[in-house]
Image (cartoon, rainbow, N blue to C red; front, side, top):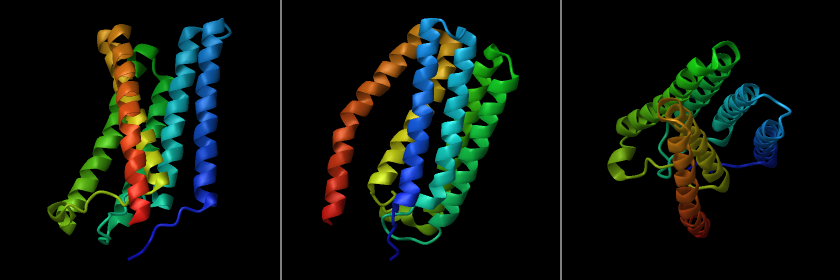
Length: 204
């Protein structure tokens, strides 16, 4: 059974890239609050950063073998490659919409594009599970490693951010704010269990 190695040359650049983009998002938010940037321009900047984060993450999905199953079934590398390309393409499309489309249209179209990328990856993963028999014996879930857990949490955050964009367009800021607060609460509640699972995985 092949074990996944998470070398610093992979995890390090990914961490630096994600943290740099997150710093850029915070800087744009601060610029909006202080009046340095107009709200619409700041919103476009934040959206571009989110799309870039999806592109960067997608680039590293195959390198970290994100979907390597705990049961060791073959064929997960094709799922990783598909996921990587899906995230990169949807991220670039997300960026393109925010560069060229009016803000109202971008607010509606971009989360659909981003969400479609996630749904395609999920469908490809489940299809592989059914074909390989991993779903039947319960070993379809990826092998637990710290880097995989971090990327899954990052992708979950991006997916929920796209949902918040969509909700903000349809129902306004109040619903979007409640969704953001709910996600933070759920993430805070789930994180200890993820950490505990990672510790158990290391002991096995």
